[in-house]
Image (tube, rainbow, N blue to C red; front, side):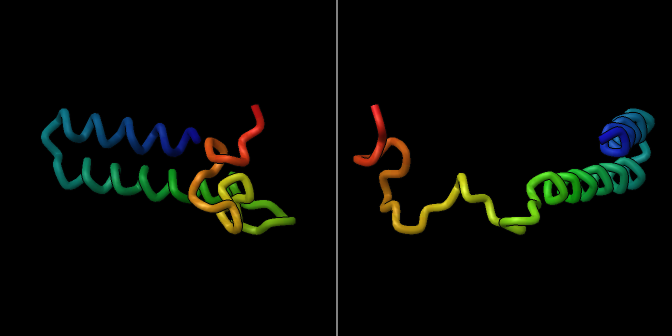
Length: 71
C-alpha cells in the first residue's frame, strides 16, 4: 500500500513540477500496483479469484433486493 501512495505522490509532485511524462509514468505505476493489490486481496485458496458474494448464477435479476430478500 505504501508503494501505491508513493507512486501517486510522485505523480502529483511530477505534475506540479511540470514533468508530465514522469507524472504519467508514476500514475500508471500506481494504477498497476493498485490492480495487483486488489487481485492479491480478493484471492482465496478455496474460491480462487471467484467472489461468491457477487455470484448471480440462478438468482435471476432481482438479487438481494428481489423476491428472495429476507425482511
